[in-house]
Length: 226
Image 1 (cartoon, rainbow, N blue to C red):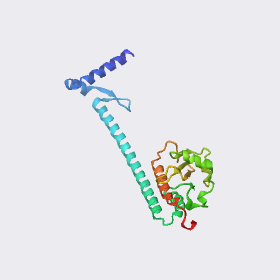
Image 2: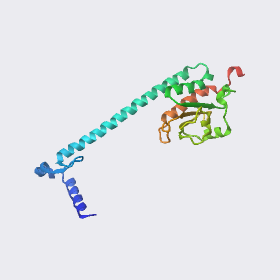
Image 3: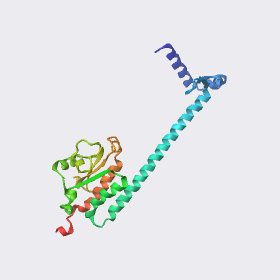
Image 4: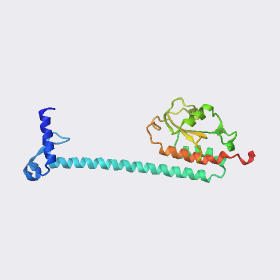
C-alpha cells in the first residue's frame, strides 16, 4: 500500500471516529471542495452530498417504476389465468377440456404454437390427444420435475408442434392427487428469447397444476364406453 493511500485511509478513519470534527471546524466544511462527479470542476462538499442523494433518489424511483411495471404485468397474467380456469370449470363435457386447454392458452397468452398429449385417461380412448405418445416421451415426462424452458434440444415432444420453435416450454401434467404424469403440454415460440432457462416458472407451474387438475376429470371411462 502506498503512503498516499495510507494517509487517505487514516484521514477517513479519523473522520469516521470523530463525527464532531466538522462541528468544531465549521469553516473547513464550508470551504472544502471536492471533484464534481460528472464535470471537470470542483464543488463544495455539501453540494456533492446533494448530488449523491439525488442520484440515490433517482435509482430508487427507477426501481419503483420497474416494480410497478412488473406488478402490472403479473396482474394481467393473473387475470388471464383466472379466465382460463373459469372456462375449464364451466365446461360441462370433460372430453372437451383438452381442446379447450390449447385453444384458450393460445388466445390468452399469444402463443405461436401449442401441443398437448395425454395418456392413461380412459375417457379419451382413441382421441387425437393420445396419438404419438411413445415410451420415451412417457419416461421423459416422469423425469421432468419442473417445467423445461429454453431452446430446442431435440426433444421428441417438440415434434408435436406445427412448426419448429426457437424456444419452448414443456410442462408435465399430473392430476390433483397423483404423482405420475398423465401428459405433456408444449408451448413453442419463434422468438428465441421468449422462453429461457433463467426465466421464472411460477406461472408455468400454476398452468400445469390447473390443467392437470382439470384433466383429472377424464380418469374415469366415458359413459358410453361401458
